[in-house]
Image (cartoon, rainbow, N blue to C red; front, side):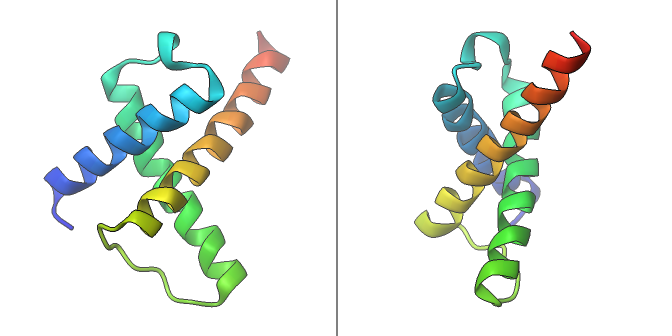
Length: 86
């Protein structure tokens, strides 16, 4: 995927993850993109460990679902860290 695809993919995955976790009102577009891209990396890495398959950067529904799951996990971990320090 090109850089524009990563940004679009990250924005969509981050936005859906923020809706799922109830953080949508506190997150802007840039943070949605960053969380979505980080979630795609985290989710892809974890799925590679679980399934034993290699990491791919494809633009499909299964990758999108993995990115959302990774972004939700990423938001959950950072939410826990924010509660301890906040």
